[in-house]
Amino acid sequence: MKRTPLTPLRNLILFTILTTLTLLTTLTPAHAQSPDPAPPPDPVKLIFIHHSCGENWLTDGDGDLGRTLSENNYFVSDTNYGWGPDSIGDATDIVNWPQWFTGPESGRYTDALYNESGQNSSYARTIADPGGENRIVMFKSCYPNSNLEGSPNDPAGDYEEQTVSGAKYVYNNILAYFRARPDKLFIVITAPAVQDSAYAQNARAFNEWLVNDWLADYPYANVAVWDFHNILTHPDNHHRYQGGSVEYSTGSGNGTLYYDSSGDNHPRVAGNQKATAEFVPMLNVFYNRWIAEAPVSPPETESEPAPGEEAPEEEESQPSAGVPSEFASGAVIDDFEAGTDAWEAYWGGGESTTFGCSPGRSVAHSGSISLRLDFEVVPESWGTCSRFFGGGAGFTGTSGISFYYRASDPGLVFDVDAHGGASDSPTSYYHQVETAPESVDEWVYVELPWEQILRVEWEENAGTPVDPADVIGLAFGIGTTTGETKTGTIWIDDLQILGEAAPGEEAPAEEEPQPELYTDEESQSEEVEDEEDSGGSSICPGSMALGAMTMALAGVPISRRRKNS
Image (cartoon, rainbow, N blue to C red; front, side, top):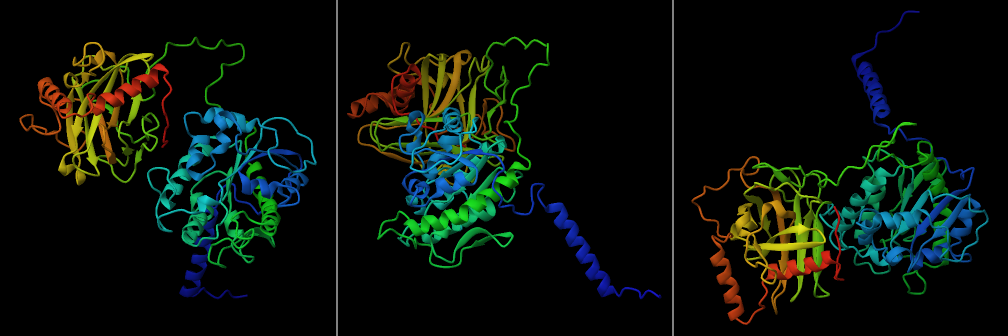
């Protein structure tokens, strides 16, 4: 048979098809597979973090979720109000998830979570405890978390708050922890809908972002999202396994709660049972996708000695990661490109004071991240963002520090703090900087010699400069005097040893005075005297903040919180 030559058009069509198939093969994730709704063949331990809506959903005769999960070979445990170390079970708002998974006490909380086998709701268990840790973690915020302010398409922000951007920030934050634990399956259950339509479209858009976009570039199968909110908004809205594939339909209704309990925002039985019918097969799909590649145990974090080989002797404590044993002129202390985990926010005094210490991803001097301080410090309160270096930081022989700052407003006074001595009884030093008018629109460069960072007034040898050989920590802080509230945002970037400007910038000429720097010890003393004469606090804002920090380090109970990167 004679073969007819392909026309150019047919050639083009064939090429397009082959190219598309090649791209699809290349771009398909390694863990992609046909959805499998079959229950696990052997019992799997699961724990659910929730409050009242989750309790109703689990309860026999209401949502029946606990019993249905048990019948699908999941051994279910749960947390509730008052559960766990520090009663962390009380904290299930979206803004609280970094406390559970990435905060300074998260190791204690997740250890308790993985080892919990108790019940805090009423549901039947039809299988025995198979032993070992919980391998699946479900977590859900309650319905008030559907009242997210902002706009539906707001991008991720810089810190946790009850807005669309703040919620996206939180989930981006905790994804780093999930990536480090491929041996666990984390299931995000979206917050239930509410009857009020004010923020309904924000909630719907945020949850669609979680389902469709949040994990788009995530390489593993150990994180999944199920949209509880969506299935409660209309009988025709679904997130389920149906006809061999996953159906996610969100187009009906206006995003408010359809299955309300006679005006109450807790979903009624019909909504909870619809949720159970749709969720359990989806959980099976998530589980089977994950278990196909899941390691049995967490990744090793330290190398183990070979059999018969002695472990190396413990070395003396070294400075914190990323801190050289000795700084040279111009060396970078922190450019924040690796994040701000090394910096911790402390605050105290007034109950309404808030102080955030987080990555500034939208404003940076060089690179893409700065240190962002967000604060509302009420009268007689303080806040600091501090970094401690663990053993000596290696500042011996250096002349000072330099950095760049931006500010939301001119005239904000902030402290540059240094701590010397031993970590159990630190000495405190400070220098004040007032934000210049130009800092609202551009970065301002500050050079601060060690001799201008002076001992606080109430400590021994008040007014003497810090010895760089003794420096164990640095901080940026805000304090207030009587009757004053300070609110604003300050960004810090390219903190380094005095000697060279940050990359791409020239330091100001030496003869040009810097308005935010004191020229000598006398001018600083005069300002303190003027403050005393005017009837204000005899302790300057920097001193107040450092005093509270000293008490914190000495073990005196004060407010202490951290906002994580």
